Amino acid sequence: MTRMYGLPWSLIFTLLGGAALTGATCGLLGTFVVRLRLSSLGFTMSHAAFAGAALGLALGIEPLTLALIGAILTAAVLGPVAERAKLPADVITGVLFPLTMALGLIFLYLAPGTAMSSSALGLLWGSLFAMAGEDLLRLLGLAGAIALTVWLFFKEFQALLFDRKLAEESGVPTRPFYYLILFLTGVTIALALRLVGGLLVFVLLQSPAATAFQFSYDLKKIFFWAALLGVIYASMGLGLSFALDLPLGSAIVLVSTLGFGLAVWSSPKRRRT
Amino acid sequence: MATPAIELKSVSTVYEGERVPAIRDIELTLESGELVAIIGPNGAGKTTLLETINGLLPHTRGQVRVLGRDVARCGPQLRSHIGYVPQEFQFDETTPVLVRDVVLMGRYGRIGLVRRPTAEDRARAQEALELLGLAELAERPLGKLSGGQQQKVLLARALAKEPKILLLDEPFSHLDFAAREGVAELIARWHRERLLTVLIVLHDLEAIPQSCHRVILLNEGRIRHDGARERVVRAFALSYGG
Image (cartoon, rainbow over all chains, first blue to last red; front, side, top):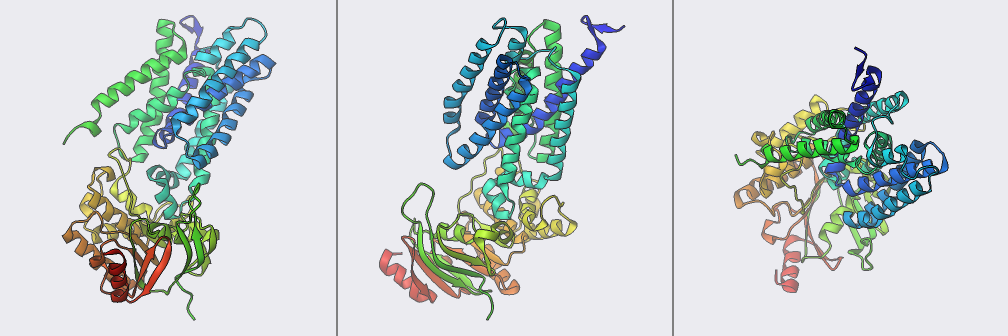
């Protein structure tokens, strides 16, 4: 047997590997996003990556390159703004989300050929067939780099995730680590864009980690479970997408939301002892 | 002549977006091994003064030197030798950290980047937990503890650092009477046995330790009195009805 759902096994394995690596990477970084309440920043970054990729399509440039630039630029600008101006999260999202979304749609509209071509739609809600072998290698490199960074600087990240002011008080310089998290989040979002899509990539940065936080107070365990749940959500989403012929991003959102809902319902943190 | 533990020369600190300095023209020297209390009404600048000394708040004028080094330049390195217990803290029930980790974190600055905590670091953290009577709570999530227990955890964290200087901001505010006595005795013992320099902010004048070398009265960001306990407390009572 060489095919499944009419697809060669090599493609199936590429997709499964891509989904698992995207899930693991997003799960690991999501631990920071959830705990540091960076959701609005990540949300805006994901739409900036989408706008960048759409601009790439319009200009005939590799969409990934401009998606990376869009996400990292947003992190570089919004990180200091959010930190220094102490802007409430909803203000950042309220102002910049419509802007990045509008730019993305304008660029798609300007893209040559059919306005809503399959590559354009893939940018919006992800595509099974956008993932190639080289994307897999990039994701593997990123997942390895993030896992290594978390392992090397675990105690600094632990202090930062506990309380930033007390971390500084301990003598841990938090600012470089905060910006490192923003940078890695931007890169992750850009690389995950092909698979999950610009509209929905953010769910993988939120749901696996938010689920893991329901079950433990030990940060090492939370990192581990967030990465594993990311793999599970993304892989199950891939399966659901195949089985019901749904857009991949949407299928992952359905699985992740269900998983998070079940976790909140069964969380021992909410049980009275 | 020995280097002072803390030395502030004409120091003012203005909060971001504010015009009026929270503390201004502060001249203050603490010799090594001194125990000094700071009193003053609400909003006098007591917390600002402590956080200016350890560099958590950047001062806008003057010079702050701790252990002979400039805080503006060597903040993180110096902070690994300064234990600090803040007045304000709020850890909700979801805070993902266990008591033992919080106490060990006190040593992270002196351990240094990348390096792992050693058996020695863990032993010091355990010792601090035992000194504060928290050993049985070591595996509990911090956010599940009462305010008083959390305050003791923060004090254990400061002591686990084996600091040369201890800055305490209302360290008894969440404690009941019995716990307060025990913690006051512990601070006095550490000060005496380890020659610690201690600067303690207090709201309750009766809590000023007997072993206090001098008391500073702060109001509207300025030092109004600096001297013997009885004289400064009397001045405070006369001025503010304390």
